[in-house]
Image (cartoon, rainbow, N blue to C red; front, side):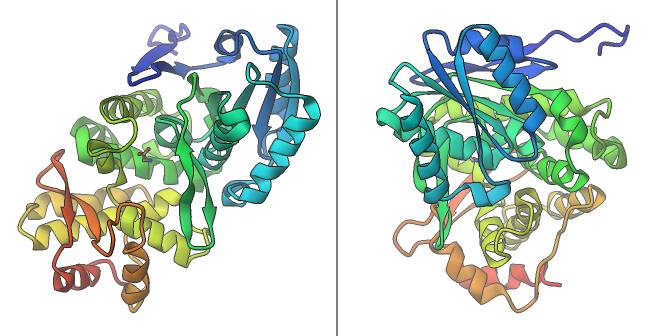
Length: 364
Ligand code: GLY
């Protein structure tokens, strides 16, 4: 709503690169979907069991425009991101006779959109996918930029491909029913974008962190839009992560290792929260980051109720995992650090002693 009670118009944020598209932020955006899928006969809506009503609404909206639409329910959370689940989707597409001109819709959180994107990327070597993220992390991160894939027992997102969506519809009404822990976790990614590129986001949250964690809060839309703009700008400049895009992995190297150590029971944003506090500690010890900015990580993330520490004694196990992170090259560990607020850099092979000492700042 705008200040005078009118419905705010939909915001359209362009994403550049070889196949440009738009991220739409607004409310009740299903009317936008048919145009993205123009020319398709069949559409598969891939969704988790928690969103039956949204999936049916999506199916009905598409059926009303003449698309033969099927709904494919996949497991919730990281359980969706397996080759076996992707295979079950391809089997369904085969039974329904999906051709090159048909399309996929990914409706759900980041795990669903990652899976749906990869199902689309591989089917007939690539059909269109429209992403309808329903979580904060999906809207500001996962659904934008074309990273698709699944996990293996060795780690997250180790199998996948870049497959850009034809459009991303961020319907803010979906956030109203999001579990609070999921909402909080998503704010971890919003904070990440703030530290790497948009400090104004941090100031907005700092003004009322307790308010910021409630769905539908007055700054929700601004936070989502600002965060989408950061992601869109980075992936437009580097769609396939040849360089600059690595900055989006701020906090993720340790974060992914924690997620794996926890068997993916931790929220992604919660693990990234610890990872950012750790990255700030490393940067401080390397003389790259001032105390105030490093301390700001812990203060802000704690105020949002996100974790800022992890098991003491887990460092060796986590370090071994960090070395096989996708950002690693050979045995060289690469960490995204800050050279100051909103000045991210990638550092190869930071001093191992510094890495261990910095862990003491997050060890609980
Ligand atoms: N989530 C990080 C990226 O899209 O590159």
